[in-house]
Amino acid sequence: MAQTNRILHRMPAKQTGNGSYSWSKTPKIIWGFRASIIKIMLRLHILFIAIAAYRNARIAVRVLHKLLAEKRRIQGDSFVVRYVKAGGRYYWSFLAPGWPSPAFRQFVQNELARAQPFDNHSNHLQILILAMTRKCGLHCEHCFDWDNLDGNELLGVAELRQIIQDFQERGVTQIQLSGGEPLSRFADVLELLRAAKPTTEFWLLSSGFGLSLKKARLLKKAGLAGMTISLDHWQEEAHNRFRGNEKSFYWVQKAVMKCHEIDLPVSLSLCATGEFISEDNLWKYLALAKQMGVGFVRILEPRQVGRYAQKDVDLSETHLKILKDFYFSATSDNRYRDWPIVLYHGYHQREYGCFGAGDRFLYIDSNGKVHACPFCLTSAADYLSTPIDECLDKLRSGHGCLEFSQPDISAKCN
Image 1 (cartoon, rainbow, N blue to C red):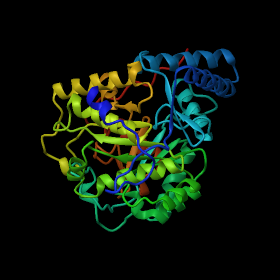
Image 2: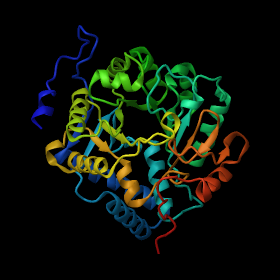
Image 3: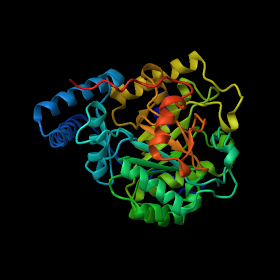
Image 4: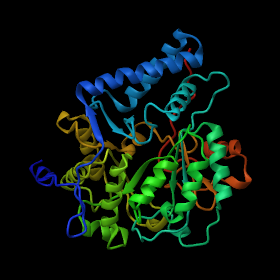
């Protein structure tokens, strides 16, 4: 850890002479006693939501016990309790709505319905990943949407608004606007955000390319909840090479800083290739993320889709063990309690199954095709010509995750 500590020196929040950024105005990581108080308040709020849903305190407590047991089975009890505070809300994951918010209430109701439906509320779909554009200024080594880029846009604003409206009516609590680069359709993003209901949080999945302070402020005012920004190496040259653009690292730095200036939560997204994975690289990456002040780091594994199709990019058992050990150290070791929260769903998918494919989330590409996720590109249906229930049935019955099994969610509370 001596190496990581050497790159954690803080400087004033301003642009430096070489065009890079330093950090001071950043989201707060809440841990220790304050985190314990927040956890108690949050759980009390969840209890009130459950009692209101079932109109019976005994049933509410029984369902919550079931959900808590499931959470412990999947995540364990060793994680350091901490929250990211940004935009007046508290987050334990950027994949769940911040608390308190209308989206958080809907999120809890969906999880309750997963265990035991109430008042005909049987929805448990939480996230829609929506590729809203075929345009991007980068040439990323791992691009899963490579075959669709730089063509004419097939989804206009009207179609995108209809998709969003349909899934909001379905009870989805988070919509991730992806691409391509969603900022390339900036005016359309604003229109979509302004037209949406507040029961859903919207996040941008972006390279940060072209984000200015003015644009960031407009996005937040229109209703954007947060940004996930791709950063694939702690070394500037290596990241730029991976992204196929010599200014990509600069745009990541600039975008993160602009988000901090308007108190918008940020997650970094890392595609952890076999070439990158080492204990040294992972800790240096997380140390840089801490220095940048981001709240979350998401680790994705490379898959044989898009530009990686038919290439030997699968991780070895050695790579997976390094990732697993890093993940548990970063999330369970109290020494890192004020570091960014690390999310590594590959571990949970191997242990318990995939929650994509219309279970907790799904993906609609820039052609309007419905997929299990961005990395399982076997289209189940054309969304614009297929009813939503039929799309979900096809995903769940034969077009699910190609890599992992789906968890059993059929058991209800007795």
